[in-house]
Structure formats: structure tokens, C-alpha cells
Length: 241
Image (cartoon, rainbow, N blue to C red):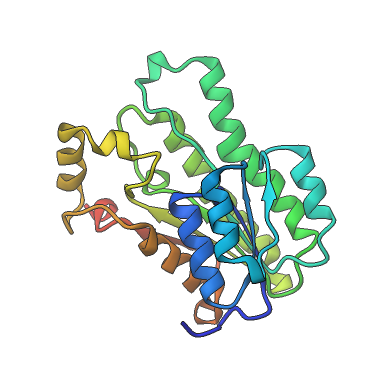
């Protein structure tokens, strides 16, 4: 892979597995020094070992004040990929306040706080990519909170893009369809749900983690130099219907 990100430092949250890990591996292969953020685990250790020559890991809770303190200690952050998030798919009447608060905190508040802190360490020409969802563009049963939080991220993306354009900082989102990851596998293992998903995707199959990572690389590198405030929807046509 061309070293289009050589010399760049990239923070990626939710980095140990699934989409986050694929993003780390792709940015690393493009020459970046990666700063993966995730709770300590065997999977996280494996990622660190694979990228050890250009890796400054942080193990812990990305929503914590201690992570923000770590960000303050960094000399420079060129790329931020906000990937951390969660979903609890249930009918609206079954969502408790605890679940509501947890999802709002992790999917929206944490993204905002991390972005705000990283911008203080981001030079002119920096890049921010929020991992959103196709659910930030449509509605779906049993996903009222998730859709609400991802629509919020799409609004944040546009507002940040306009505000930060004078600094040459580009802000975009990547909005995936369903991707088979440890978080989604239990849902996709349900034959009826899997049939529904494939019926909704005109291309007829879910996305891979590499599909998402490649979109992040495009928006983070020089090829996307005129793109800001945009949501790159990687959904196989779901939202085109």
C-alpha cells in the first residue's frame, strides 16, 4: 500500500476488534503511527504487537477523564477516528433510562468530548472521521436510541466541518450498513434477521470491516482533500431505496 499517511499520527477508538481493528491495520499499512484506544484484552495485545514499530496504545475506557488527560499530553494528533459506540436493539417501550443514558453517553457525549480535546492538539490540515451508521440517515424498528445517536453524529459532522474549515481541518463520517463483527454476529446469526438485512441491501450481502476501513483511509488521506461535512455511506444501497 502507498505510504500516503507517512508521518501522520492517528487516534482510533474502539480499536481492539471489528471495524476499529481493521481501521488501525489499514492506517498503519498506509504509513501512519497509530494510537489505538481500547480496554485491555488479548485482541488488543495482538494488535499492538502487529503494529509495534509505529504504535502508541492506550488501554482503558475511552469515555474516561484519564483518556482525555492522555490526549492532552500528546504533542500532535493529525487524524482522529471516533469509532467507539454501542447498541441495545429493543422496542422503544422496553428501553430503560439506564440504557438510554449509557447509549447517549458513549455514542454522542464521548464522541464530542474526545473530538473537542483532540482538536486542541490537531494542526492545520488535520482529519476527523466519525464512524456513524446508515441508521444516521434512516429509521429502523427496535433502534430508536441508536438512530437518534447516529443522526446526532451526522449533525455534529456537518457543524464541525463548517467551523473547522478555516483551519483546513476536514470532518466527515463513514456510515456503514451491517458489518459482521463480534457485536453484530449474534444478530446476524438469527436466520430471520439475516434474511431481512440481505433483503434491504440491494447488493445482497453485508459489508466487511475492510470496506469500512478503506472508506476511512480515503477520507483521511490526500485523495479526499476537497471533501468535508460529508457522510460516506457504505451500505450496499440500503439508503438509496
